[in-house]
Image (tube, rainbow, N blue to C red; front, side, top):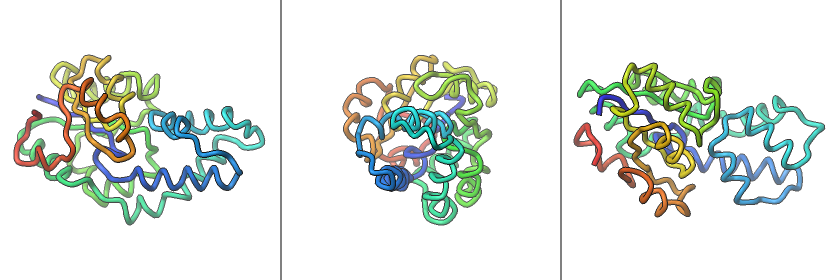
Length: 217
C-alpha cells in the first residue's frame, strides 16, 4: 500500500447521527414521511445533488437547492465546529501511515465550508496529503471518479491505493476503479454490513484494529 483514501463522514469521524437528526428535522418541518430508502440515497450524494434529488422526490419546487443546503448546514454546523469527534483509532492510524511514508487523502461528499473547521480541529488537514470533494468529480460516489481524482492528487496509482468506506454503494464504486477496499463499520450502515464484508477486500469494525501498524489486513 503506497496510498490510502478515506471517506470522512461515518468512516473517519462519527458524524452520521448528526446527519440523521438533521434529515429527520428537515422532513418533520414539512410533514414528509421518514423513508429508509431516502436516507440511503443521500449517503452517496454531495450537497447540491442531494438537494436536487430531495426537491424532485418530494415536489418541493418552491424551494431552491441553495435553500435546502443552507438549512441542512444550519442543523449541523455547530456539531462540526465543536462536537463531532474522530472514530476510535482513526487519528492514530493516519499518523502511523504518515510515519510509514504512505500518501493519504480524504474523499468526501461533504462541502468545504462545512467541514473545514472540523478538519482543522481534529488535525485531519495536517495528517492527510489531500482533501477531495465529490463535487469536484464528474460523478457522485457510487462511481470511482472521486477516488481516482484522490489517487491522482496523491500521485499513487489505484492498484497501489486502498480505499476506506462505510457505505455499500461507495465500496462498490471504489472497487470499480480498481482499488482495494476496506469496509469500515458504522451504525448507520449496519443493515448492509454483512454484504459489505463480502464485497470489500477487508473489513474492520474500528481503526483501533489497525492503529498498531501501517497496513490493512
